[in-house]
Length: 120
Image (cartoon, rainbow, N blue to C red; front, side, top):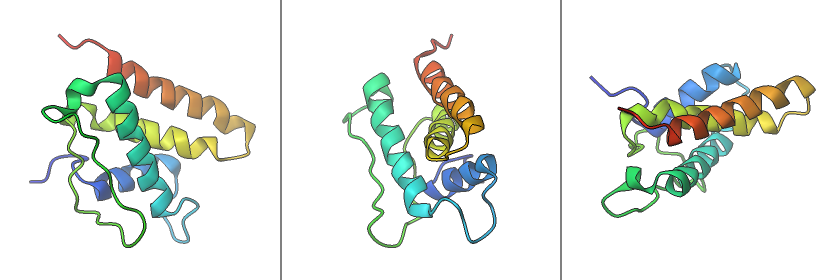
């Protein structure tokens, strides 16, 4: 059985669920969501470099051509939902509606909170 949110495609699909963007034509192109994943992983590197051990390298998913949805995220399963919150919050920042601003801020803050929370 595949791990939850273990691949680019799974994170992309879950992000679409929270964005209520599951039917084509999509409001948010796959390329934009995957770029959001890339930026989220850079934020993970800034906030929790220990999660990217042993090499401290940031995974990068190419968006210049066809997106490989099978690529593994490479982040501990405990933090993958946080990645989705960041991506959804980032996508919501693009919307012009005032109601999405608060939701976007909440999701981005949730990402930071979960990344920096000490788990015992």
